[in-house]
Length: 100
Image (cartoon, rainbow, N blue to C red; front, top):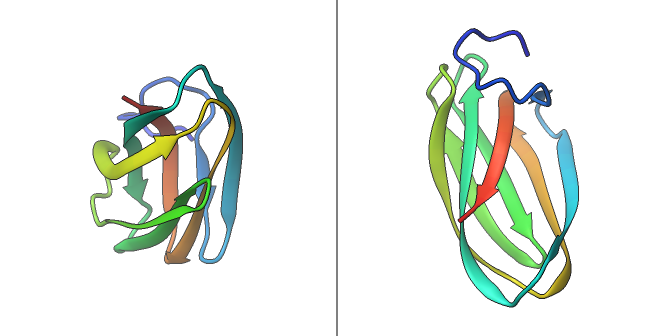
């Protein structure tokens, strides 16, 4: 994305309605984490579903400028984990994800 307000991750994606992205990652311990997402709605309010492993949460944003938003808390297990984000309505500009 070439959005001027975007942190320079150089890995942002635009997801259209029904599109999804999935990331696999490793964790060194079993721990509950807070998921922070830096994202924006392309035009109108975006609705998406987020899964980390088998836990599912709903995510919405109507901010058209990139902003950090807490998506919720997830338990991450030691070893392999998966996060998937699927857009359910409109278009999402996704810049980065962070587990605190």
